[in-house]
Length: 101
Image (cartoon, rainbow, N blue to C red; front, side, top):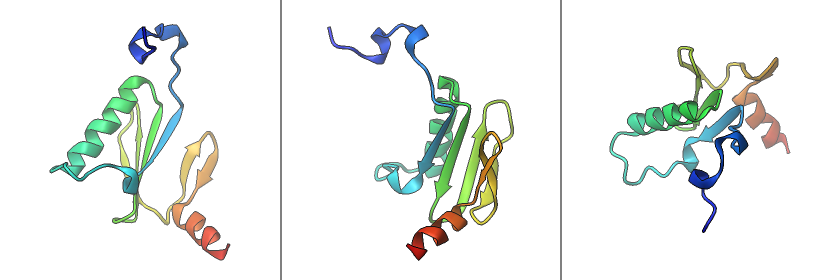
C-alpha cells in the first residue's frame, strides 16, 4: 500500500503557518478565470489549516495577504507587511537588495 495523505493519521499531518505563492510559478495556461484560481487555491490552503497565504503578483506588483477569519488585503509591493509574528518585509526592498548583488 502506498503512502498518501489519505493514509496518514490526521494527528501526524501539520500545516505550515504560512505559504508564500508567486504567480510566476502558477500553472495558468488552461485557466480562464485567474482570479477564481487564486481565490479557490487560497481558500483551500486556509481550509487545510494554513494560517496565512501570501500571493506575490509580479504583473500587478502587488501582494495579496489572506488570513483565516480576517478580511483579505491587497497591497502594493512597495509597502511593508507582516510575514510572521513581528517580522515585516517589503517585496520591492528585497528585489532592490538582490539587484545590488
